[in-house]
Image 1 (cartoon, rainbow, N blue to C red):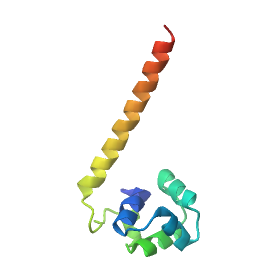
Image 2: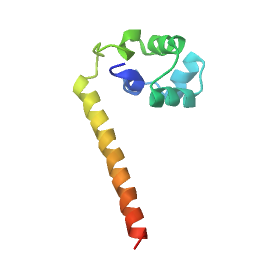
Image 3: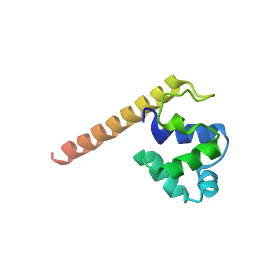
Length: 102
């Protein structure tokens, strides 16, 4: 998957539906949707159901198919921001560990 299931959040925001509503429409708990997006994996039936509710082709989750309303550089920027935030958190934890050893 090039973009993966992380696009679910962007698309559901564009459709102005909540994760809870999306989950309800496909017969899942909202925590299941969050886990699917976080892990980037699920079964074909669930991907098809999500795509149907979000009104996108299933291939959006696998191919480099553009999503109307989302610029690809927005997705890249969001991914970079998330990576940088994770790095900052790791550095802050390391600083705390080092300070506690003094």
